[in-house]
Length: 152
Image (cartoon, rainbow, N blue to C red; front, side, top):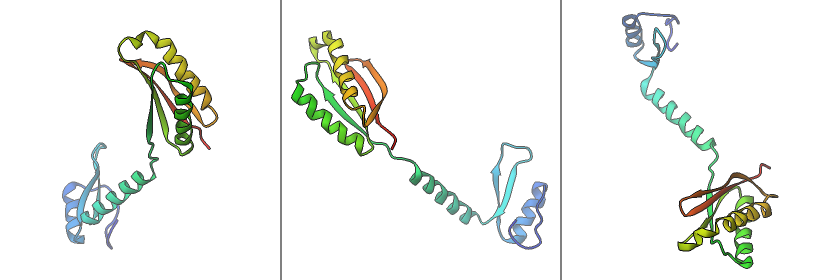
């Protein structure tokens, strides 16, 4: 504990408050889920500062995943397909996920199989840098597929 002459142990709340007051510090409840609740005698401002710093460190360590979208039509030509495939290749190499989707407008909804074949071909062409995380699924007028980068 903080301060000299303060021993560790289980105290009633009145005694704990008295110890905190004598030390010129605050009594902070750490965990209320257990019985008796766990409290600490600390400087409250410093406690808050340390908590914020820990949260900031945790946030900085988390991987920030960006998702890039590529849109196709059910009748996408080879040149356009290759152009978009090359962009997706670069996105995956840089560590971004790629969400490819085929958008069906009007009567093109009849060509669902063609859209699925297009997405599967797209995934097959990119399998050296990415892996399929979500197979093609229909969401309203869109058929969507997600490809994530392969681990290095």
